Image (cartoon, rainbow, N blue to C red; front, side, top):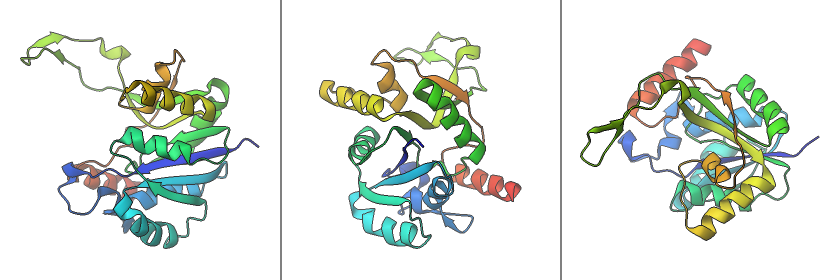
Length: 229
């Protein structure tokens, strides 16, 4: 069976949440947000190893209050994040001991389903680079420097990227190393793979697979979890 590792960046500060506590550790349905996230990979048979990336001053807290407390024995390492998400994920990729494939998933995106994970891995084995995304619901406007509308792109061709994003390990490591060497900073992992001239297959995600960024997101996530139960 192929070796698949999950890399979970959870080193963000979450300033928009308006809390002194890192948003990853805020309570969602009676346990930390990031615990819900890790649990999805812990319970998924094809994932053999999990690497969590935390802020340096939160590594011990993450280990004791999340990994140990909830008995996530697939988590082999909790490693130090970088100054940016890109640096953090690169640290996580470098910590991978051996893997054929890597799934990168936001620690603050706790509503991932088993069905979406299964679909991601199935497509990954066919394409080698897969992103989860949803069609945008709103019309998008591009603006100029003075905030006047510059153009309106065709909404039917616009998708909002989510995670997980999944890649063959050698491909994603090469993409991150090239970006680092050239001083390029992307907004997501698939963007770095695109720079290599490689195609990234998008699969239909879920509007419930939201990233908890604001207090409103937290309330929505609570409602979704209650509905699932």
